[in-house]
Amino acid sequence: MINNKVKNIENTLLSGNYYILKKYNFDYLMPNGKWVNQMREVYDRGDGAGILLYNTTKKTIILIKQFRIPTYLNENDDGMLLEIAAGLLDKDNPEECIIRETEEETGYRLKSVKKVYEGYSSPGVMTEKMHFFVGEYTDDMKVSDGGGLDDEAEDIEVMEIPFKKAVEMLHNGEIVDTRTIVLLQYAIIHNLLG
Image (cartoon, rainbow, N blue to C red; front, side):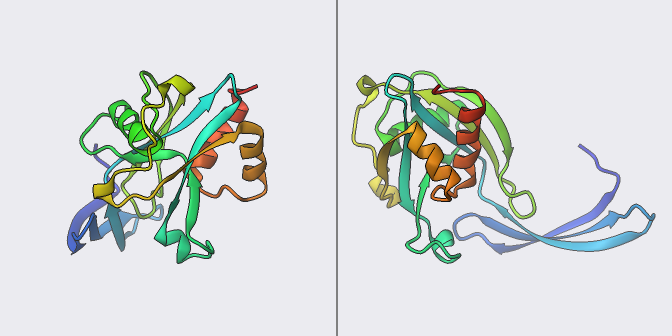
């Protein structure tokens, strides 16, 4: 992986408290042939995986609701966000990660999932690549209440929502998490729930 338009990459660690934040200085070759020095701050939190759980019989999906401080600081009144189950890979492959995270967060134990996309979350500032999955759940797959892990201080509300209501929530702005929007749009385009 070599890009001849980039050279002299230097980095400085700004924070390593929870994840890694570095400042990068580099020279970039512009279309006019001039080299310019650029600086970017890059946040490395690892790659993640997320899943839209759906039930074709009941025509429902599972979403979770939890507090997200960045959204609270940016005009989300109570900071609560309705979203898909998701998590960091933590050295697992994406499929193993999402099966683990699904059980931790929602209480459903899946045997199989389908990968539908992968993409960069916010490529101007983050290294994170998200792996997007869909998975069918049934009531007999429920093995716990979910809600996340106590040792990770997670406070997750599991919500089973009729798919039609979720689509309404998407269109009226109640669902604002980009990962959730992507997978709901996938479900709509591919007529996942009729």
